[in-house]
Picture 1 (cartoon, rainbow, N blue to C red):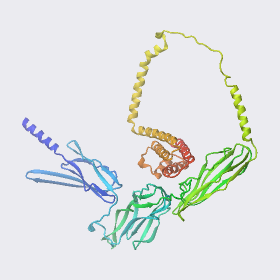
Picture 2: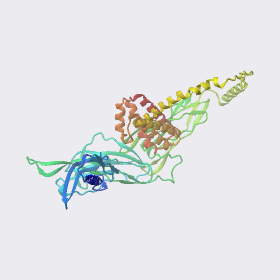
Picture 3: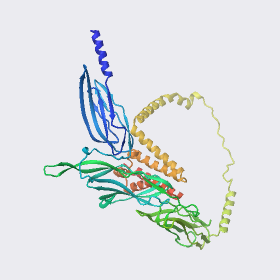
Picture 4: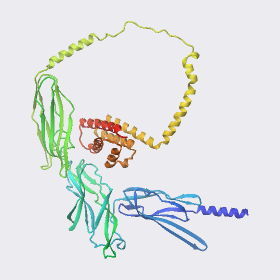
Length: 581
């Protein structure tokens, strides 16, 4: 009997060792518009099959189940397969996680599989597997670029058009957003999508303008615009007809891509570049205007320095006035009144300086020069303002002011040793026995107090360690304060300042809204903040400042504008702290 029992156990263990459960994919590299078949294969009839979540993919079909069993030469074989058809939703390396089954009380799992997803590829489909139409169906996404060889900081526009014909379009979703590395970019709002008639490669077609972007190259040489890829829902005719003779329409999805575009950016001429040129490109007027030129003692004036016209309005700095030492000039208040269109930025930028005279007399503010590169002529142009005379009617002269200062200094020196005390109060030293002292009693009873405190602290620490969400919130709060402090240290260094400021604002959001970086779209941030009772104006200021951090790294910026952005960030974060519930 024992022999049969041992034989049975060995046979059972052998069967257990032979359980196989694996995942197989039809390919390990595919384009964004291709589909992937994945099979989960087992050689036993496992129960409680758990499929993976398929993060990064959308389900097209499945699961379908196949079972086969055969007997060959007295040996049986069994196979069960769960099959899925999936399509990637983004580019990059995506991991398909483990599936699981249960057999005889044991859990078996497949190995994770890595799949590489590339840009959309040209794809021929089997004619027997596609809806049949007239053969003239057209669906193509095109990126139309206004100029492929601009100057540095010259505006170019990219218009994304979807051409279609003999096919129905039911909707679309962005799979891969275009990246504009080394470009300052601004989206042009499209209020409503409208279908227009046109032609594509000599064929009559309809088209819809999906996106408009204006770009300002910030670097010379060959720059690449990453492609826009869309997943489009379409309606296609088939060979079948319904009972009334009408052609049956099927719905499908197609992925289209505009393709990468290369821009060859020309540098601005170096040989004739004026001294003090700060990067203005376009067509501008330049003015320097004082609010008044005649002042009384204690009065001040506003000096308004402005440039108006068409060009890269937000990407250069205005010249700074040079004033005599007798005039005290404060940091400027910067103002921008700029609109964006397919022709570029246009409007007016202004620096307003407050100037306060210190002494009576006449003082000259020297002429100022503003240079820009004129795209229409391909040359630099310089505008020079007129000299401005400031007449201060009354108040002290420099000589009188110096005399007054000397007298004050003499008085201060006369009273320099006034508070020194002439008597010393001595305190006698009293020696006490250590065993009767408070220190001895404190050390005696300290363990009874410290040990419970240590136990409570340890329990609190364990609770905090187990609180994953709370730890993440505290870490994000800590990072927000850290990066805000770093931003303050880099007020005179533009690029690290804006990098730190952007990180501070992102970590503040992650702490307050309990979200991750991948969820930080503009619309999602606005919706979450408003749902937490944040003020709409404060929310808009927060979003505008975060967008400004991205392009401000490439744009010239004065210390005043950097200080203003820092002060604005501190104020917005403080207001949101009070408003968010």
